Length: 236
Ligand SMILES: Cc1cc2nc3c(=O)[nH]c(=O)nc-3n(C[C@H](O)[C@H](O)[C@H](O)COP(=O)(O)O)c2cc1C
Image (cartoon, rainbow, N blue to C red; front, side, top):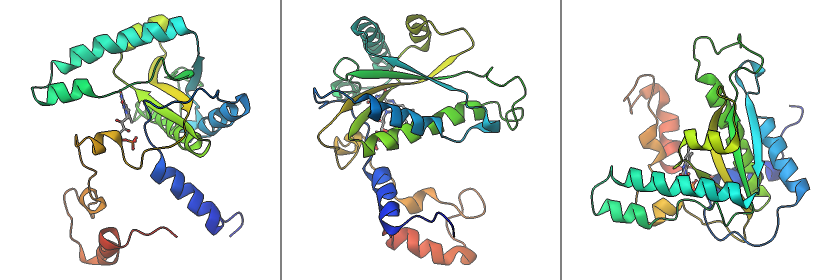
């Protein structure tokens, strides 16, 4: 095959996927180089998108006033959402560090603009949310590219979209999808923070795969892969 990945390249991709983390602290004071930031944004911009609509925009933020306003919204929403959970989980939830808005040198809001190349977008008339899914693909590209550049990325969703829209002066039809905090880090944790804290465990791969129909975990014609997903998950 033309343009096949070498073994090293494959390793690199799987390494990025396995070792990517949501980062909320331990950002260093080293600035993100413009050329690195551009590469990461370009990785995001090359994500798949429904009907090739590329419905994303990336708002780069470093103004401390903007960050403070966003942080205020975070504090408010964190308090509000903590009322939805009983003790002892409530105190545990409130003890977690769940954002790095002020500590990270760059904040980035990724938005969804449903009007881009619209109103008819191939593939979106039946599943309108496909536009939003496309933006999420861009965010994942960015997250993985950032990992390879030693840039930590933390996604903050404990925010009011209404307030965010006001702060960033988004047009009414544009939806904020992700508010991300970016900064250079010295290391990435080997496991998700929420796993380390005992909040939730990582599920086994075999427990999230069904064969042919919802809930079917056994199937003779799939027996070979059943062995692999249970015992043999080595990377090439
Ligand atoms: C849509 C989305 C929203 C998230 N919102 C938050 C958030 O508000 N605060 C936070 O600390 N982490 C947030 N995260 C990060 C998750 O907690 C994290 O991805 C998960 O615990 C697994 O850890 P890992 O990303 O390090 O593998 C979010 C992740 C996604 C995909």
